[in-house]
Structures are given as structure tokens and as C-alpha cells.
Length: 320
View 1 (cartoon, rainbow, N blue to C red):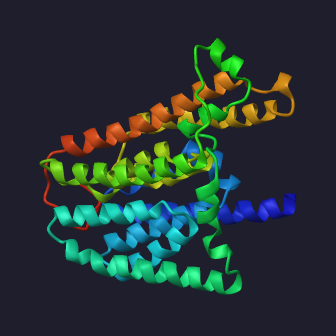
View 2 (tube, rainbow, N blue to C red; view 1 turned 135 degrees about the horizontal axis):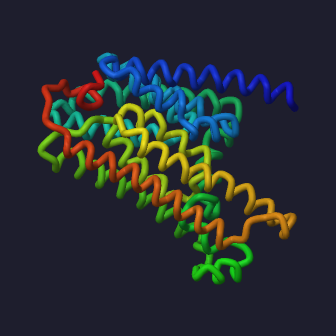
View 3 (cartoon, rainbow, N blue to C red; view 1 turned 90 degrees about the horizontal axis):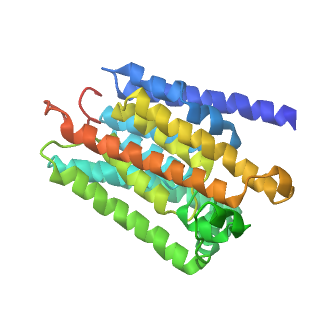
């Protein structure tokens, strides 16, 4: 087990290194913003516990290709990224919204078309070898209950008397069908919020800014918000150019929730050594507030920046 974990740790290190490089290359005028990826406590906590680093790296590569005016290459990479994790679809929508605001909506046709070809090709290859495997992730999601990290999980927390001792009143668990509707509504809400963000302000925000705000909406309304999903936000935090203070406030809340999840799960088998559900709920709410703070700071940063001459394909002022 240690041998295979060692191999995985090396692969993750390579994926993170590539993500740092692509992030720096996408912001050539401010490459040190990529330090938000290289030195992020969120990356240190979550990179090795899931394969999300692959989807994050492919998304960073797709954004780099888009910044270099290579829409077909960007689309192919986006399709591969969406095959690994669904969240890059939000970034693709953000590209469309910002391009429409810039009066260049037609320029997104190659990137969207290439992404569809790439995604469908991967699905066809997987489906040829395992017909049920290609859609298993989506069918499993449709029937799943609320997972850890999502606000909907509070109704499924055990030992409710512990939550009540902290003043929390836990609702009844939400049915999977209603959860699916709420999560799908979250994606629709994210698109509406992103459209308003991209089109309503005097200054056109960057793709990373719109993507981060939209992705926060999707994460906090999803069926689950596992600890590793926070990795998705790190390159966007770098490209937006948020201050390290905001990054570390968010990372601190992530670290507290990270520990709370495992302590709460430990309590299911060893009650006297686990975390009561009320305390886990407290740290869960702190995490959701922290990620909301990231979105709020991004919104303020985008609308408070002075207008600068920029090209429609750039991520924002000073990022190439």
C-alpha cells in the first residue's frame, strides 16, 4: 500500500507542478500569482486524497490555451477536463458569458465544439469497453443522498442531541429526488449569477472572476461538497489575484473542516473519540461562510478595479 501511495504522491506532485506552470503562463505579466497554487494549504491538505488534481491540471491547461488564442486546443482540453470532473463546464460557460459581453460570442464556437468532440470521444471509448461505466457517475449522482460538506447534510447528522446542545435544530433528511432538483437549480442559479456579474457592471470582469463566483454557487448548492473539491478553486484564486489574506482565511476554514470531517466519521465507530455532530455542523458552516467570502471578495475586486485596455480573451487586468 505504501508503494502505490508513493507512486500516486509522485504523480500528484507532477500534476500540481504542471498546474503551477500553466497558471503562471496564463498570467505572464504577473506570474507570481501562481504561488497561490504552489504554496496553498488547500493543495497540501487535499491533493493526494483523490484524483481531482488531474481535472484541475487539465482545466488550468485549457485556460492557458484560451489565453494564447488557441480555442480548438482549449476546447479539447476542456473536454478531457470535463470527462475527469464536471466543474470545468462552469468555466466554459463563463468564457461564453464574458465573450458575449465583449461582443465576440461567435469566437467561442470553436472551443465549445472542440470540447463536445473531446468529451463525447472519451465517453464513447469508455462506453465501448464498459457500457454502463460511461454514465455510472451521473446515475449514481441522481440517486445519491446528501454528502459531507453540503448544507443539505445537516438532516442526516447522527446524535442530534449534540447539535441541539449548541442551539442547532436539525431538519429531516432531504429526499434524493428533491436533492437532485436543488443541485440542478444551483447550476441554473450559477449561470444567472454569472450572467449578471459579467454583463451588469461598468467594467467587464475576467473569465477567472466570473468562473470563481459561479463555481462557488455550484459548490454550496450541490449534493455534496467533499474536502477535495476545494482544490478546484485554487487556480482561479491565483488568476483572479486575490490577496493572500483572503486565501489564508479561506484555507484556515478548510483546514478546520478537514479535521472535523475525519473526527466526525471516527465517532461513528468510536463514539468517545469522535466529534459530536453539532461541532461538525459548526465547522461546516464556517467553511461555507469562508467560501462565500472568497466569492464576495472576487466580486468587489472585479467591480472596483479601474478600467484598463484589454483584449476580450484575457482573464482580467494584468493577467495577459
